[in-house]
Length: 124
Image (tube, rainbow, N blue to C red; front, side, top):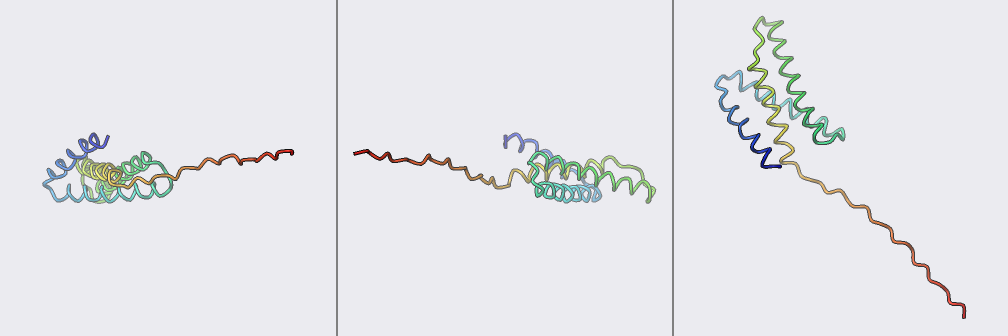
């Protein structure tokens, strides 16, 4: 399973290197930060790993969409889907890589109680 995830992760690093514009690199970095923040906030709330990964992706998508809507409404620029893609790709990268490097904590097993031995008294 980890090999499959690494196969998904490696192309995202190469795509991130392909961003020659500084703006795309900043969006990738912001997506990484937003994704890590979303992952840790939901992981700390005792959600499972898959829920934390989805929360990381959703946080990156929300941050990227908010920034592009800000650029469109206030600064008068166009909605750039490549910037949004760079932000989502940053959150995807961190949401896949964090679970790969987390330690697996073994849960302590519950010990089964042995029935008490009852010694029989001999009636002599």
